[in-house]
Length: 465
Image (cartoon, rainbow, N blue to C red; front, side, top):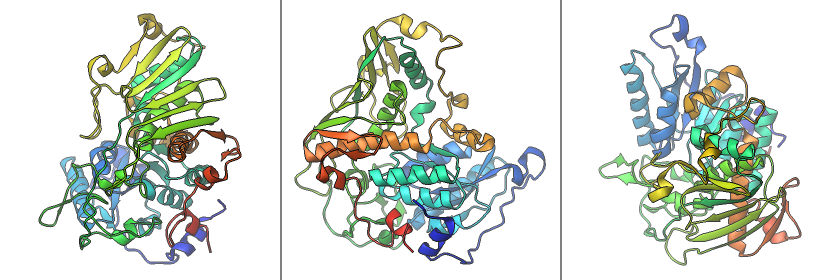
């Protein structure tokens, strides 16, 4: 990627545009509450994950101010504005929140310091790159990208622009996940041999009945670089009755391969990230991948159902991912094992809750594996302040030191999931070169590292001009 901020503005047609933006001044302007001491944040995407996780997580940070919200659904923008202004009003802060239907307009304003991107998977890479080129720090939901090419571009641009980055792999900030990885990295279970990852699976189905696009929803832009497709109630996000919008149901786009690769990236990005953390493979990837899966033969939803994947790494570890395993990550070594999961914690209503013994968030084959404290000279991993993932991001922006995840780490965990998906789609074993990021001797697999991108959207079209 050799794009510059000027290139992006020219390509997007926004160079020199006059965008109205309200003056952002909290009512209390002295001392620690002075506007100049706050990080002004733009929220891009105000749907289920935005409202349930990212917006509340950011709003509670005293060093940050959410000053603008953006979504392609006008109802969601209006709801988000009410939510944010209501939060600040309860805290005796007067704040007029700006609203946008196009994130590119907001990025032009210098008062925005950082962005949080809570959009569908196919709309992640482009706004992250645009934000970094505009000089903004970035928080983005996982998985990082839809394709290997997108992920590499994001990592390269964020690094080149020297931006602070965080991805929504919040398990990194959970104490049990950090402890599990520290114990594995310090040899508490001996030589690591196998990592078993349990993930959910998705059902088939989805209505194919074509219906009118809601007047408040910019569906044309929502499709972005993906192929044009008729609008149905199960293709995008739920719409409520009587011109309302719904946030509780799991959106249909999560089950359509044009917009999401399914649970292998949706939940896989969480657990593969933890596996990489414990394996010390955060900046590389597997060398062989062999996967199989069932894919729907009818209906709107096209992502995989039941699946099994085995990946080998250069350090001799094998990672096995299977829908029948307990949801979580099990590290198995020559001297024991550690199993870590979220336990009963749920981020959204649809999150699976492990049952029985698997409900314990941190377990080991022997008590002393977890109870023996780390020595001063042993490996101590990044500890997020207060176990708070959004606070970790805000702290990183204040100190200009890396957050618990970087763009390269996010790319590598997402890319391992995409490699598993590629093998499942082709139904055969693949050999991967993690340094060159290409398949060895397989033109078909290499062609799947990217997808055609329909203009004017997508990172390929950002680079033109």
